[in-house]
Image 1 (cartoon, rainbow, N blue to C red):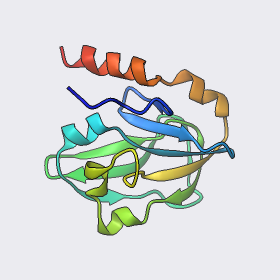
Image 2 (cartoon, rainbow, N blue to C red):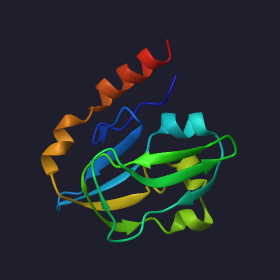
Image 3 (spheres, rainbow, N blue to C red):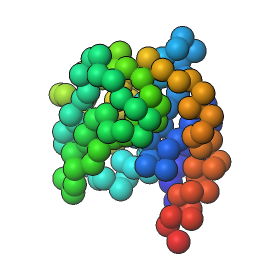
Image 4 (cartoon, rainbow, N blue to C red):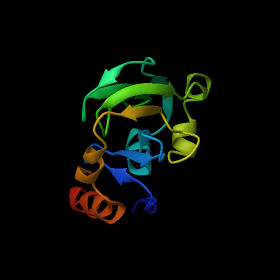
Length: 132
């Protein structure tokens, strides 16, 4: 069973999280559940600053010892920052997926998209249903 997911953010069925920074930007990453499925993360291909992404379009790539997975953007927007620390320490995602393991920040184009995402309890119910 996964650890409790923070209630201050929204989630996708592709196992990404997003938190509203309150200034028109959001921070995104992958969930604890996702990093557990991937196991040891060895490389992260970060998005370029200025890249335009649509909701649920691939924004980054996470490579683990088991597989290579796209990271999908929870919202439409423009990449304003990428977590450069992941270039030298991709394992930050394994150790702290909701903190130091964030992947990118986006300037939101359509903030209302946040409402279409799952809250923490809905995401946990989704994971539970997926595991059975």
